[in-house]
Image 1 (tube, one colour):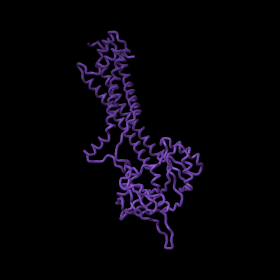
Image 2 (tube, rainbow, N blue to C red):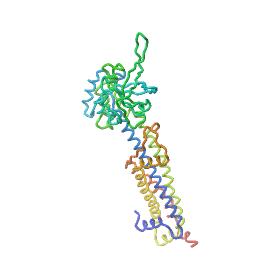
Image 3 (cartoon, rainbow, N blue to C red):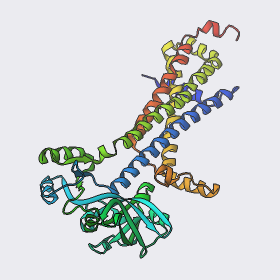
Image 4 (cartoon, rainbow, N blue to C red):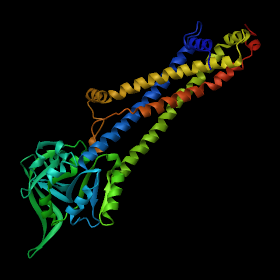
Length: 415
């Protein structure tokens, strides 16, 4: 244990000396370096956490927690399958869908699209696409009316708005006596949604399930079923339970498997950034070594006097450990406060810089979103703080050991 007088002397050494303020200045630089390293690490991990959470929320707002499909892309007798799936207590909603590729044509503009045929009243229970509609209404999709809801970027690429018409061409041909003709149908734009993710806004389009079945000639079959579960983080276990219940016919896939590579890459990036920035923080922490070495050199006479007054080498060791840990503690606490403050106001700061510099840091075409969210997880803060403080404590050992080995006679030889 460190005694009160050892803490007192170690704290005094943190302040300016009578004849040498340079050592105190170096101590302040060490604190600032540790604080900056801790703050940067907290901000970077908070941005990665926010990026991951935001992407997961936006992805799951447009897709289901799990899907039931068939290996031949057509799920027959889906009503019976849906009834069996609903018996699982963890499943809160089931909705059928038909998906397919199509080419959309409007005036002189064309664009490919991923088309989903849905039942609007049931789709509301498994996704939040109806909440993302910024023009028109998602409920305007009615059987036989051939209405279509487009993503905002897709509508912009086609140059259409609500009330305009687009021609949908699908990659299936109709054979007639006149030859092979492409299968196409004119649709009326009844809604435009903005999910906040360029990939969805640029490529997705929704039509009524019956219209899609007629166009893709699915008959009474569907491509699959979308499932909503109570706890999205238990979707994998629920999918396994449903797979056991349904047997070897349908294929069950949950969101963690469908987007596995995507979220795994984010987790890998977080780990790599943590270790890279940890090296930067370690450099700042080990700067304490040079600081304390200079303090030990400057305080040779003081150490000798303490030894002659009866202080043991262990007490001298504890004095400089107290000084080094004080530098580390102040730097770590300041870094946590600065990092949390920056993370909490990061979006505001980024938008301010964008206005000042007249530029856009986050291009949705590249980063899938235009905002820079930050989520501070206190488990990460605890790990960062403990690591930084541990490195600081480790950095004090060698200088403190050098101070403890000081011989009073040699130190006072020239005094």
